[in-house]
Image (tube, rainbow, N blue to C red; front, side, top):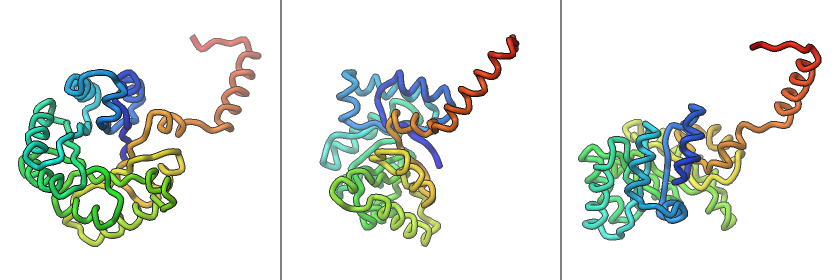
Length: 218
């Protein structure tokens, strides 16, 4: 399973990239607004840090303008993935951009039917939002299972399932069990994957015992 981090905070991205865990980055207009910086500058900087796909989202809702925005974003760096909404105009834009060799992430997916359409439009990634489904009393992970089942029936589909709106580590584990290709995690959730009480306790005991020896490796 590939790990993307869902943030526009460059400091966080640099820190996590240093661990070797990051395969890519996803951003959206809300995350860019939170950064307080110019979108194009942020995307260029992130693309220079992380060699994998970096999602940059269009904000237009009509096909013509969305396509213009997507082409401009794609010129920022080779690893830009243009993010478009799962709407008729978004899928039209996806079809054109992918035919031009640009990676496309079709976002705001909330049903298996929508995911099927994204694959037929040639999306590089489709982003089902599990947390937002959980918020309204539906089972976000059930949707991931449905999409994975459908995609496996059609080997010619190359679209990868990018699990989005991840809220906690169990979302990550459940998605991995279902065979999802990618999870995009908020920085705090990615860091929580490291944590286990027994790891902390074991390390504490080892260090205490080492200190008693009075030795030094260096």
